[in-house]
Image 1 (spheres, rainbow, N blue to C red):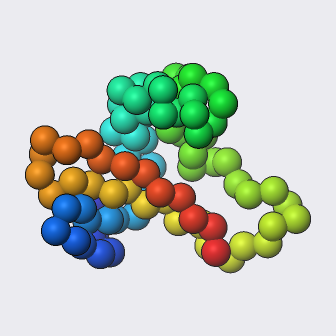
Image 2: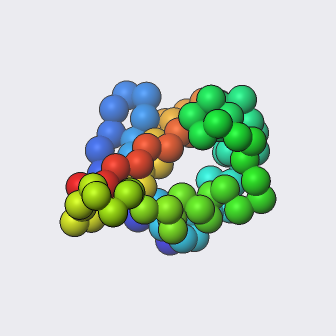
Length: 87
């Protein structure tokens, strides 16, 4: 089951991603290897999406909660996006 919508605009809506979203996130990474390379400095491996859920900020950056948000197009013809925050 999808998590609730956190916010919505005319073009996008956002919701927190969970472990069940790993296959969809992996498909997004594999469909956009140039973007993944530009952001991460490497091509997406077969576990790139799973790594998003276990990769933590460096120890010197204290945080209380980590959010992985998916930004989803309101129209199916547009591509979804990912945002990641640690607070």
